[in-house]
Length: 217
Image (cartoon, rainbow, N blue to C red; front, side, top):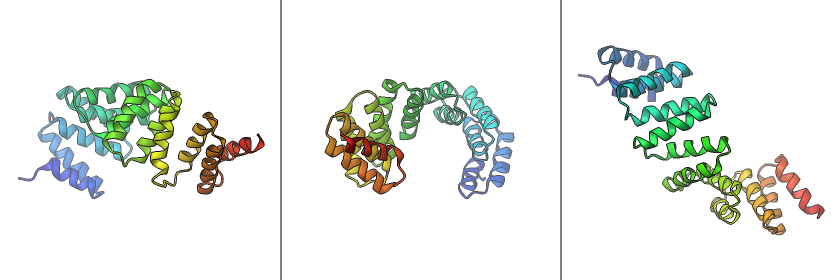
């Protein structure tokens, strides 16, 4: 007997969304109280932009199984997209509480706190995200930004330099490292980083402004 849930996921991965929808619909008709099916159908709806309908399926999965960590995480993503950050915070937090331990949920909760300027709350989650996947440059960058926002300038420099040591081609990394060095009154180092940012992105206005300010001193 074919595993319709597995088959539906395979069709989604192949980009055959209409076929996947048909398979999931049949599966849900047969077993409407399967929380995993509800989450997967919600994921399909989210993939085609039906966010409100997707949310309904995630909440239904939670009603069926209140420990369905992936349902909380998926609902958190929807609320994040809708810029309903308090609700996103709640659902991401619940996903972790219910045992979800992957990097994505820590990163998303950290970013959600960052968007609310709750930097002390964001810091441990971004740190955990960076620890779980040290190769994730975005997680490291956001961790560095959060450190800087909290006045942990030496720590932020160390985090940004983890990225510059890899020769990342992200002008914002060099710009923020330049700002950190300027804060430490190391003007030559700051100028070096602003120049690198401009080399990567010639129209980087903030780096250009930073360079001009330093050169005028």
